Amino acid sequence: MLLLVLLLMPLAAPFLIAQLVDWLPDTPDDKLNRIESGMSANQVLEILGPPAGGPLADGPLGKIPPVGPVSWGFPEGVAYVYFDSEGKATHKGWFEHTSERRLKDRLRDWLAEP
Image 1 (cartoon, one colour):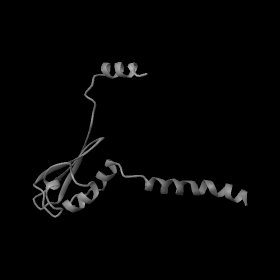
Image 2 (cartoon, rainbow, N blue to C red):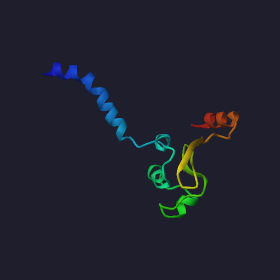
Image 3 (cartoon, rainbow, N blue to C red):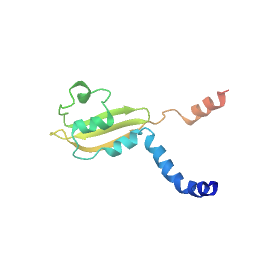
Image 4 (cartoon, rainbow, N blue to C red):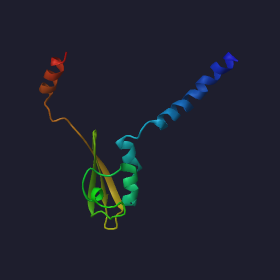
């Protein structure tokens, strides 16, 4: 019996790892990848949640956003989705936060840490 379990473990491991990954929360990149052209503002809101501010945050979910970009802030960066005059998503993008600090300043901070 033990031999059978040892033989089946390598076969079951990829399945178990895939299940574990499915339980992890979506990253902002995962969420943005689910946005498709032609989605309504409601569908985008269901995936990304309400934006921190702006036209979709203030009104009801069914409100058609103004033409142009709407942005969502995340610790890693800012996601944006452009909407057309019918309130449908046309395209999306991502701006990653970058450090404005110089290398010398970052090295000084790193060396000063206990």
